[in-house]
Amino acid sequence: MDDFLTGPQGLQDAADTSAPASPGSCIADSSRGTIGPTALSQILVDIAAISASMLTRRDKSEMVAELRAVIREEIAAVRADLTALEHRVDALDAERLQKTHRQQAVDMATRRQGNLLLDLRRQVEDLDNRGRLNNIRVRGLPEAEGEMPHEILTSLFTHLLG
Image (cartoon, rainbow, N blue to C red):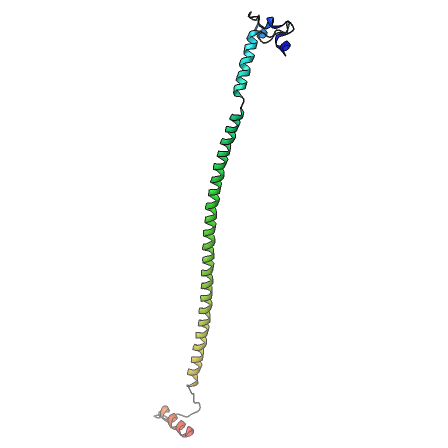
């Protein structure tokens, strides 16, 4: 690898401190197969910058820890939302159950009231029929002027029923 950096002529070319002839020669002198000191120092600066920008294990561990913390916070928030929704669903379910019981009670009361109304109609009809039974109509009885029909019928029924 030393041959790559210094070329076939050895270390003395790498230590040559003369300024490059052109901007392109600061990276490598292809005619001589060597890298100049300015290019070498630039490469070292670039390597240092790349090394500084590269993540170390510690950096990666810190990033993973931060990411885990953020994920834990998000999961905790989602769990809190789910718990709140669970409580709302439970409350709505309890309210629905209560309303169902109340509706069943109203239905039963309506049925009872309907049955009572039907019974009352039957009783009214029965009382009407019984009231009509006490009303007797007599047809064909001649009525003269000055006679009282009530007195005539009373005496007639008394004589017939004895």
